[in-house]
Image (cartoon, rainbow, N blue to C red; front, side, top):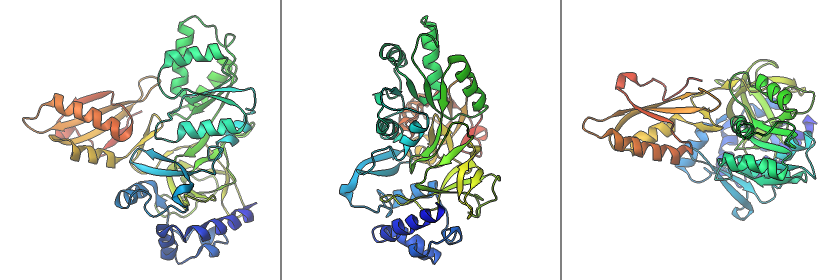
Length: 400
């Protein structure tokens, strides 16, 4: 199977370099051609492209920084992740970039009714999971984010069999249903919960949900850049790697693959055309549980954290560049840093700001809240005025 992956890799990237000048430049800088990709040793000659660097390159050369490897008319959607980072999706994609594999592994199919509570606005999560579920024959309710009272009612009135969304919002819906007198699990038809990962002992929370509410919980590992990368299979720990992805676990400083079982940054190469991300550093940390003979991972452990300065909040990454841009945009805002906490089931974001002398805090706070929501699509929970000595060296501090 690994030989097939390198065969497909050569085919995809031989065609891609003719259309994507930035990709061609990466190969030239490494002194290797797509036709020379015969093993991981050849692949490792290409430097890792970090997600933060892609964001910078797109700002310098919008919209795709020279990495698009298809005709514009082949693009069905352009997703806009905070940064912004633009991610094209081709018309030929009909399975949510592999998200159907997660649902199929769970046994979802015709007759299932799934409530999808991920956002359908700009970011890819909602639509990709919708496409993946539909590809199995299931019916999808496009719930999107918010409206917890209505979505809880929908679960009961329509007989929803599967929930798709964040763990925190799932807990919110459960609490709302139980507070209104529903005796769960007897009162609902829910069998599956496809939930997003959380910090802390998430495995224990999943066991609690499964035992208390008599359902199966499932997860996957994916990013906006690739769609699905790995998915769970019954009886296995970690994530089985999608056959259209080549995954390496690498030293985050050198980009050199580490030994099986050692933690490192997840570096992914896609084997599909159109948006040819090769040796792309996701910033997520894991370790290989199983590997192919040449070292590419076939199964990876659950995520163990992040490298770099970005922090994931409510399933969205916040970058230091976001904070720097806000300070430049808002008149009278001299410095800013942000703290992320989790006092309950929900992440909370606090902005710590230094306001210039003579400038009204109320005006700066209002502009900051609006600009932060525009840039990150997250809402600030608190804003505090502080002195310069109270600002962290890091612009985003994870205190969860």
